[in-house]
Amino acid sequence: MVEYRKMKTRIEEMNDISDREERERKREKEREREREREREREREREREGERERERERERERERERERERERERESERERERERERERGRERERERREGENEREREREREREREKRKRERTRERERERERERERERERERERDREREREREREREREGGGAERVRESGAKRERERERERERERGAER
Image (cartoon, rainbow, N blue to C red; front, side, top):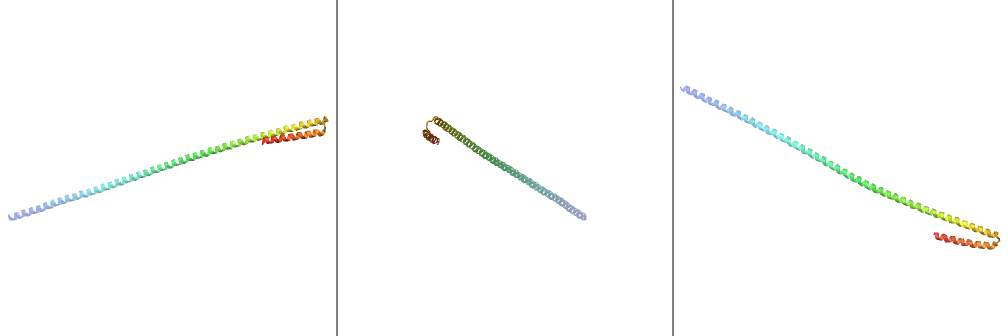
C-alpha cells in the first residue's frame, strides 16, 4: 500500500513535471510566435519606411521637375523679352532710317530747287546778253544809217569839213548815250 502511494505520488510528480514542461513549451512557442510577429511588424515598419522614403524621393523629383519647368518658363520669358527688345531696336532703326531718308529727300529737293533757280538765273542772264546784243545790233544799224546819210550829204556837195565836224559831234552824242545806258544797266 505504501509502495502504491509512493508510486502514485511519483507518477503525479512526473505528470506535474510533464505538464509544466508542456506548458513551458507552449509558452516558449507562444513567445517565439510573438517574437516572429514582432519581427514581421519590424519588417513591415521598415518596408513602410522605405515606401515613405521612396514617396519623398518621388516628391523631390517632382519638385525638381517643377523647378526645371519654371527655369524653362523663365528662359522663355527672357527670350521673349529679348525678342521684344530686338523688335524695339528694329523699329528704332526703321524710324531713324525713315528720318534719314526724309532728310535725304529734303536735301535732294533743296538741290533741285537750287539748280532750278540757277537755271532760271542763267536763262535770265542769257536773255540779258541777247538784249544787249540786240541793242548793239540796233546801235550798229543806227551808225550805218548815219554813215549812209553822211555819204549822201557829201555826194550832194555840202562841204567835207562841215560834215566831218557834224559827224564828230553826233559820235560824241552817241557815246554819251551808250554811257547812260551802261549806267542804267548797272
